[in-house]
Length: 375
Image (cartoon, rainbow, N blue to C red; front, side, top):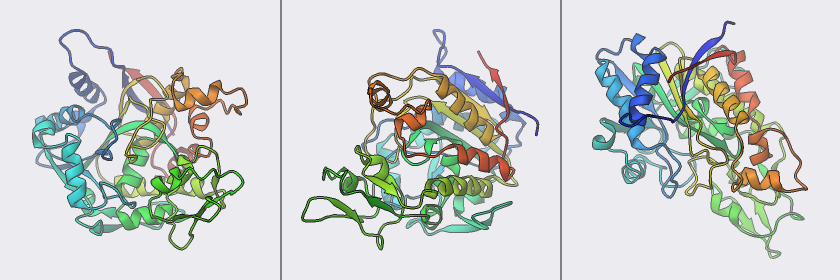
């Protein structure tokens, strides 16, 4: 398979040139104008951030993309699906309120917000997965599939289960309805090693299904009948007391994310943008965000989401970690087992290479790319 083109620009600008103008220049250089947008509904798939989180993308960047789509004749709207876990985005009413509070409205973004899987997260479409090995069909938010064109606008960051969150995570997991998210998360149930548990209760705070209880000894245990297998407790535990008894659970999650992305993207024009900034160690689904583990690197765009994620990973691995961060603390610990991988050294329980490998295997894109620098 030949190399895919990925376009990159850093965050340096001259006086009088905004970051948003530079983002539009990047998109034009990457060939976005080659898409026929005329009178086409264009879904801009993004993450609005959980209430309390401040690492999500600013709405200014969204408006730059929406304005460009409208200039090219398209009809843009912002969209995301409801979450599987309880929180500020578990239904469309709360989700829209969260988006508004976090700054996403028609004035700041220049377009409307539509929650793709409806009021209760049940408005989905069963979509075939071409070359799927784990999912023959995927349950995708209806509005996302009704759109003529898809643009993914992703905050590239760390993630407590999949290593990083980029274009594939934004589209695959983010595009799944609540039932679709359940289908992706249903491999394996975490357990607690009581000898390591310190009863700090952080895992219960992060639990996506209220499945964690505490015994008379103060130690946590997870009710397998209630647990949805989202894995947030694993990333929350600072003492490595929680792990998945199915060692391949995160690997299977990665593969299913790739297959869900295939379902969303197959057979229609797609364009993908990622911003490597405020690289928090965990997902924007958290109602907080720790200090960035890496410096701000730049903005990237491509028609190939696999190549885009691979390029983002490579740039992150080449970056110098921020000392005062989760990653920096781990690397400074003389007893730390160094993985020589920024994502594994930040969250040692993660798997991430499987996402890209499986996405390439099923024909979603290629990990081979040529990086074009836009000044």
